[in-house]
Image (tube, rainbow, N blue to C red; front, side, top):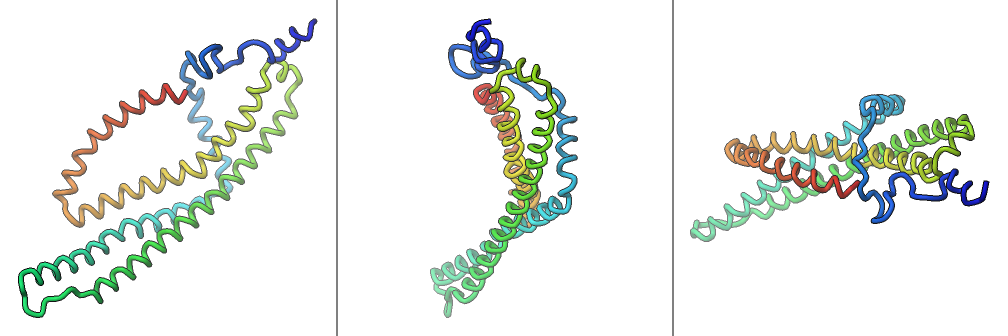
Length: 234
């Protein structure tokens, strides 16, 4: 067998899977979907199970950080109202009218404290989640390495080196990114939506209803854009 034939057999020659030949990577390739999403999710949860205490702490930190960040605008509104009342009273010529800067300063100090606490809890949340993500990925890499050492040589001969490396590096890195960023963002976003709606209802139920009525239009627009952009991400 010639060297060229050997390279083609081992995956060095010819177009590789996923490259689609001329026109660049992924051109004309169908969208790949997870073969067993539920099964994969269950396996990932099994890897996360030893870190359930840290995950519970992440959830608590996310709740506290979100609560402080949502409550801050309402406190700021009190300072704005006090400033507005003082200015209006001066314009109307009310005797002895003045802006209560001492009250406004107290509100500013409270706001600084709230934002500092929110940032602190957010930092602790990211720190804990980064530790969980890295430990989980370490366990994944260890299991993948053990699996590769048990595979026969014919497995490596039948697949391109790029495909194997992609599974070992890119896929595991994607899991790490999902755990460290996407998961925390998902938790924070859900808590923020719930908290913002509750805060809006406490301020003005009518304005809350008007804002909620615009959500279906936003969902339709986002869905339409997502369908078009997903093809480009492939």
